[in-house]
Length: 377
Length: 79
Image (cartoon, rainbow over all chains, first blue to last red):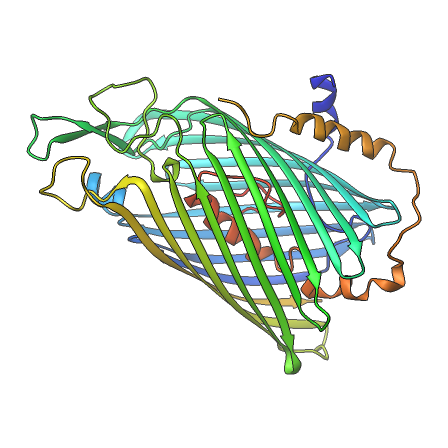
């Protein structure tokens, strides 16, 4: 198919894997989040409000904050601990026409050395007797990258996302979801602070650091399949598998399984297990043989070979099942995730006194807590 | 460096074509009155968007993989 025609069709799009024939519910959520692991703590609120109007439209707005205190493994070995704040605002508009739903959205994210703007557009439709919902999406992002302490440094990055989603009713107890997403990046893609290390016999520890250098383009494809099954009693089982590959030679597999169980008195409990594994980028090394060893060099642990597992426990409580004034219902929710990361070619440089390249591999655990209140009105 | 899903642009094109011909009707094998289990909130793929967007952001910041998470937004905590 002609690529330009494809882009025109996709440019009519952004994804919402949902029932296209029904506008999203009116609701407000106030969430407090906390991440603590690997020397990094990140906390902040997220406020999300969604409201229908004129029976065909639904508008949404989100305010999100990350307050970061970082003494991560990279920071303690090559830099100084720092604090920063990222603030993100999003607005979106859905328009429902018969079985068609259209969506436009805009997101702005600001921190002291990074700014990002993303525009998204999407369309979805119920077909085949409303058993199938097909969604197409496109988003375009422009990022501006700066470097603290270097006023002359400013780089741009452009990101494009192409998404396809299919949600399918298979039986009266089984739902299937398929998602495909292609992302292309062009511009400055590395972290302006992070460094690679290379063997340097002239130093006491046997190695030195220099700035990392990434390619200026990246293209990735990801595909996932998800299912939700209603048990013979009131509970749901879900499973998901995702496969990923990109032009940096990273490939990854994600598998998740979970169980949701409501009980009387308004409680709903959920448990999940997620496992993730990836191979490294082809220009990643923990230790390069010499300075300027090759054109592209990275020592970002997110580009290394590693596995991670996450265990989730969550509870939700209905606080006003009969409604109250203009509120139809509300829930109190708490979610706890325990994450475990094990790196297979990223070494812990806090360990000294051993030959370079023989330090133990790095690993860390993180705890992530979400507490949120939701109201439907 | 081969892409893992070289057929994706073609799949997207097929889906776009499906939109064009989506007026066709099929007799639903799960009738509307048989969908009470599917309509239960516990069967939603994205029951709490504010929470799933945050969770997606946590993963994307620490993993090389990205996309196809099923949730709306760009994986940057948006939406």
